[in-house]
Length: 363
Image 1: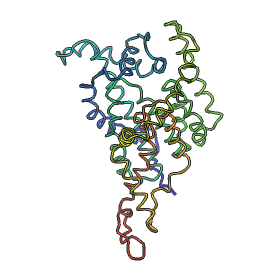
Image 2: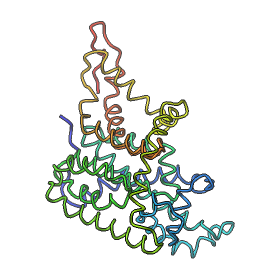
Image 3: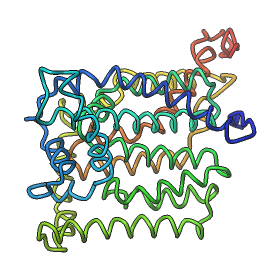
Image 4: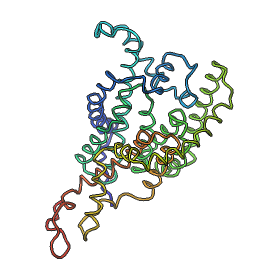
């Protein structure tokens, strides 16, 4: 059976358990994402220009796909208000334009994606990973270029990563994680429209943490907030209500392009870039675990829920056409698998004896 994470009593102890992995993730992201924030060429990314416009209160010309993801831009705009007053004094060589707002996105996304990292850490712990192994796995995933982009650029992927992280953490912990399911249901609809594909998984596998009848209220509030945002923005810019439906159906045209790209050399490289060379650890560890009767099998904690969640991520990849960026939402499952391998690395690397068993069984 998986070894549960230690559970000291009290809210203060719970806060400490979450604060340390969150601070570790934020510190790593702040270092890795700063060069992206500072030197990225925005001419290559219409997404970032759209979110900067939204944070400035301008929705005209913003793609329907991104127009309603208002939470991160709104928070970044609020943070930019005081920062803009002192930014030019600290960095006089870049006092105006988008710089204060870009810096605000950098701060907000580092904090939000850092919380996603804390969710990955605790999910891995509840799956049976050792604390150091879980922390190492989180840091490994945060070295991905998609983490650097998500934290350093004016994007909203960090919030959707939190939704995935909360859902998987709630599945792993079960009772006691109802708050995670409630937050994911409340925020998910505004985080990304493709949340509709994650919703059935979240409700079913989150039912141990939050029973289905109690999921109705946060989901209704989230959908109501999404409807209100759609109505307010459409009315403001004069967009027809049917435009969102037409835009959603148009994403089906990306499936053929995504499949063709995934099976090309360039697409294979993009898929490998999601988690980098750390992706090679899992197949090697799986091969080692199947060579003989090892004292521990690191795959014992992974099952149908992980497979279905990976399939949901694959749907995101096919509909988006942005394989690497969407594939990064599989981070909770990959982090748990990697943390389990790091936990049991000694038996996996132990040389096999002539009888087929490892020469050393030290864990």
